[in-house]
Image (cartoon, one colour):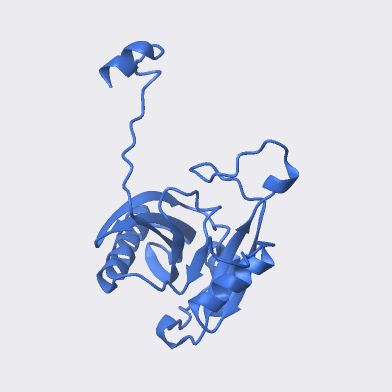
Length: 210
């Protein structure tokens, strides 16, 4: 680190060096929610199939979350409620978490509707955008009843890429978003939903194992 900083450009308050810690084997979890004067109205917790480190726009999303510890779920909701209250949010917001062994850390909090909100609205049959709009325009709202445990299907949102159309493009995924579209599919279980999503995204399934 000392050698790197000495060979880098001028390091000062105006040109700081940002050091990030990479947590291996962690899961990324997303909370999409609607707040009303700091109170949580409705929310949805989704999980990424890929490990944390892939941009959320390139990740494959499962809703309801399928492989989260109960304690992780509780902590995600609790932290979201505290942030909603502290920021006095009235409208849509999205929080991305990194989770490992029930340790939950906030990656970022966005005070806006995420690209996943239409997907969530369709999955839960609750128009999150309408709720947020009513709140922001001063109309009364009531929390919609959402019971993820009672839902007898799984929804999967898969990204679409254009690597095949772009010469010399790098297909490796990272922290910068590369997807150019997305599809959403439903299945009776996580495997059916995921496979439908892959096929809808024009992913060619291998005919035999390596």
